[in-house]
Amino acid sequence: MEPQLGYSAICFSEFLSEDGKIDTIERDEERIKAAIQNIKEIGLEGKINVFKGDAVDLLPEFDENYDLIFIDAAKGKYPFFLEQALRLSKVGTLIIADNVLYKGYVMSDYNKHKQRTAVRNLREYIKIALEDPKLESKILEVGDGLCVSEVISKS
Image (cartoon, rainbow, N blue to C red; front, side, top):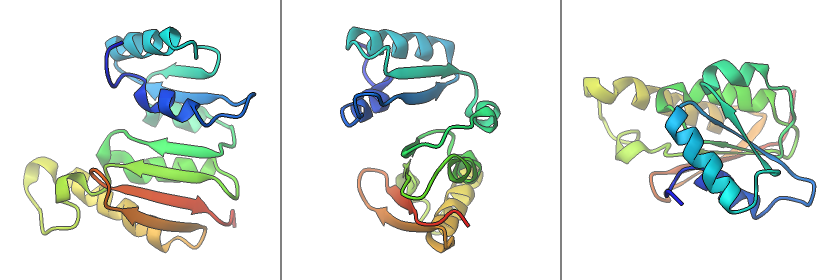
């Protein structure tokens, strides 16, 4: 098994109900093949659906209500992903965003050109998550930072 590919979905599958499903999105063709192979080797191909393409393009087409949404993608797109997560959620949904502190840059005065957009958008994500009255959120200084939000209202 090639490490990391499909890893999050495989880990989350441990907590699925008997009829539960996981939808995951991957855009790189080689990573898709490896993730599907890893999922198949563990016998989870009936539980984990791998969608092929860019999450920015695919998410607006989704219309499920999810119990948990895990965001670990392009850091510069996190505010968009939060907007989509809220749309795809219900009261009680957990939204977990990985790497929100981004090497410590997000909480510092970091302003170098190379990562400026990602840092700015991660700061925006955190601000929205902490201030939106539909969410109850906490930032956990675990790894590269997790933002865990519970949807407490849809209006």
